[in-house]
Structures are given as structure tokens and as C-alpha cells.
Image 1 (cartoon, rainbow, N blue to C red):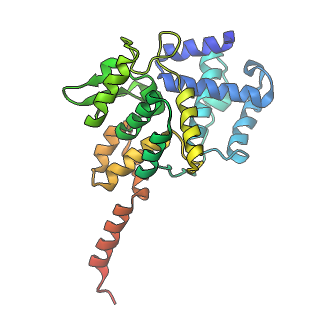
Image 2: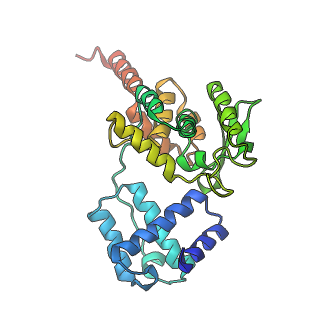
Image 3: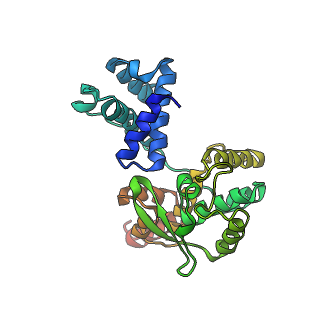
Length: 282
């Protein structure tokens, strides 16, 4: 790790950014450096501006992707390097207008995928992501203390250190206990193989892709599709939108509303209501 990267990570920790945000911001700066083939502290303001234009016009990244990349780059130059660039201080960076619909995994494909995953710890991790709506960083960093077996719930620390409590399906409690007995780590449900921290995200991502590709599933499915599947199943079965918002840890209900476009039962309900309301017009 370079001294510059260490410094940025220290600044992000001092700013109280969540672990997942730190990882994304650091990766954004690394990708900027790779794009130009040089250290990022040697780039000019115009080079950084052109890179942001490249993300929008050439790579055509999704709105959320642009936001975290530009925010990470902004943090590096403003907070870590102290650059007083108009690009970040007086100009407004507007994210792309398009917002791609999430790609949820179907329940049937989820069951097939779990059977195809070889390692039990990854099967358990994916099961938790799907049945509790967790992000990969949330499940990877899940402390043992987060499990409340009396209330059958999980205490989850999400983006921007926001805390939420989600129901834990009873079918997962015993597998969680058996998994913990396999390592008996006092701190983490999924400890790193070497070291004292939690497991990283790379290995479960690789396990997911390997199982997905072996089954010939849609290549657009990612680990995050498990969380999308959770939200979609809840809405399909009549859960209130604001309840789903709380369970997902969304700051705004607008972030949750995107899932309403994906649920066939909701479309059918709307169709029936429209027929009932306007069926006698002509």
C-alpha cells in the first residue's frame, strides 16, 4: 500500500466513512490512476475533469456508479490533498440521468445457486443476503454480537454507519450456529482466513460468479441481486413500501420505489383496479 493510499484511508476513517464507502472511494481513485497510468497526485484539474466526462460519455456508467466514483475522487483531492479546485468547490457535478433497474434473482434460481456453491460459509452468506436484504459488505462484516436469537433478528450497520434491525428467518439460525462452531471466532461470524478481521468481499464474489456461470444463469446477476431479490419478494407478497425501505436501510423511499417496477403481482393489481375503475367508459 502506498503512503498516499494510507493517508487517504486514514482521512476517510477520521471522517467516519463506512468500510464499504472507504473501499469504493479508494478503488475510484485507483481506477483514475490506472486510466492515466500515473500517480493521482500528479494529475491536473483538467485531466480529472476529462476522466469524469469519460465516465459519463464513453463508459456510460450508471448513476449510482458515477456518484460514488466522483465522490471518492472529490474526497481524495479536497480532503487528502487539500486541492482548492473549482471542479469540486464551485462547479456542480451532475450524475447521469439514467437509473438502471436492479436485476433481482428469482427464488428458483437462488435455490439452484445455493446448491451449486461448494463452500458452506458462502452458501450461508448468500442465504443471509437473500433472506435479510444484506449488502455484501454487511454480511462479510457481520459481528457475532449482531445476532439476537431471542428476538430472531440481526443488527446491521449499513452505509454511512446507519443501523437497522432486520428479521432473521428461523431456518438460518441453526446453520449460523454450526458455522460459528467451525471457527469459534469471538468477534466475526465470517472471520478472515488469516488475520483477526472479517472476511473480505472478493472471495464470496468469486464464489457467486463461479456458481452463476456453472449454472448458465444471467451474466447480469451479481451478489447484489440477492438483496434485490429480497426487496422484490417482500413487495410481491404485499409488504408495505415504507416497511421495505426501513428493512433495506434506504434513506429515502424513492430508493425503494424502483422495485415496484419489477413485481408482477403489483402490475396485476393495478390492471385489475384500472379495469374496475374505467371498464365502463365505452
